[in-house]
Image 1 (tube, rainbow, N blue to C red):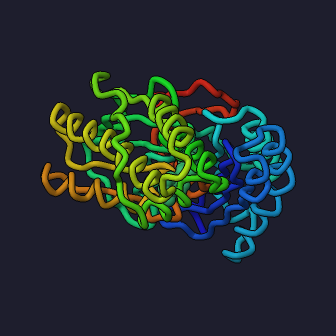
Image 2: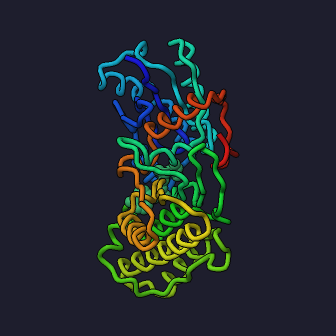
Length: 330
Ligand code: KG4
Ligand code: ZN
């Protein structure tokens, strides 16, 4: 059996492993989540994350091979996240991949995590048509990028401070909702009314974002109005985030002709964002491309598919951890 990439993702708090074909077919996948561990601290504790990856990584690799009825001899290559992310977590992933590659006689490609998110929209089936506008919204990043078929990327906007996922997580903590905050905020917001006029941050930053001011507004509002229904605060916060994200997407699409809008990253799991993006795309006349829910948050499959791009382009990307990569880097 040929053309099987083992993808390994350990940039943050999930140990994701998958076996992926060049066309985006996922043969097998597993994610060992550290949610319970970090829930106790209300966020990701980097030192603990690294240790948890050490415990989880080999059993997770073994599981995806066993689930698929494959052995290491069936694999073509290994792709592993080399950055950006938490340095300790990246070191565990890259070192493990190098060891496995050496032992099994396989080449190892160091993959840019952001390129992984980008390619998540083509997992299971091919969806993206180029040129594409990409909105990447995760715990670590919030950015807009214009991507060509060649893989060339132009960054057209990014956050000046916090990411939107970080804002979701912090607001969830203020509301006592635990970690990760995104899904909890979404659930609560669905039952509330957006009755608090939180500011729309970064209105005057052109295509750049800013979420720290919004986070502070929510904190000040809660201190002054402790009895305001939490579901209404959550709904108002989500409305402010979506308004900013979608307004900037619309502007970006007007400025950079695109065949589709690709929304990826952990926050792309938000049903409210998915619905808002669908509406925007219908009125803008572009196709919306979304990864299946399970591939929105960090996983090994997106790294495996992105690794095939490195193979195809003959890129010699060493699996050396690099926390400073941008989406334009390979
Ligand atoms: O892409 P991801 O798994 O990790 C990073 O690369 O950062 O994104 C994690 C972020 C967290 O902030 C989490 O709260 C958010 O994605 N998230 C969501 C949802 N699921 C995860 N945000 C909104 N709605 C969701 N359903
Ligand atoms: Zn991510």
